[in-house]
Length: 332
Image (cartoon, rainbow, N blue to C red):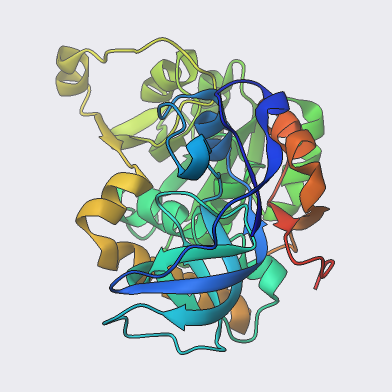
């Protein structure tokens, strides 16, 4: 089968079209003929070597954490979905930039009433958004939320999901005025330029601060987020887009100021609580299909442009969700 992968870590130039064996589903697994593959920043990190050196078939690794497509085979003991069903799937071991992908049945859910192009952007982003808000963030009715990287894939989803989980006000930060324009349609109560956001948050909340901060950026943004918290506020860490050096919080500061830091990593949750990911994926697909959760159609990009897409992710030049058109269907 055709795939895009890399044999050595590095820049976008290491991505190449390759031929690798079509995978066979093992026990409890599903083989999917891929229509679309979502693109996530973790795949950039994968390519750069932040998760280790390539060790896949023929020495190649194939990125891709989420796909949509059609079930073509089931491994022994797999409960479904049945062959012929259109599905979306999360792939914690990667492999989505390919004509076929294998997924554990725990992470595969039917797609009904939602375009496959849209469904491809759900399995990683939406369970993460639900996870940082509800599982790690423990959001409660009436609380206020601040979302860093407000125009990104997880940020865009979290902004809307937060309302359905009871948030009273949702704020966001962006890196530029252009990003603020892109995020404006997501329904934020206010958007702040990231530099100096803590003072802006205090002003917007009359000095109280926010109850929950979602932070995929790291570094100085993470430190400043603690200053933007209300009493008993939480910062949920789920990424390091800024590639900052490791940072250590002062436990004395957390104690004396009634603050908390939590972490969320979808790969860890997938290993230790697979049902949690499956439940969030089902919930998201249903809410999106019914219109209970509004969303914007993703940007659909030809498969051959994957290197350019990775370059835009590294430059911070994306908003919303981008998916690769693996089967050549166009934006359907």
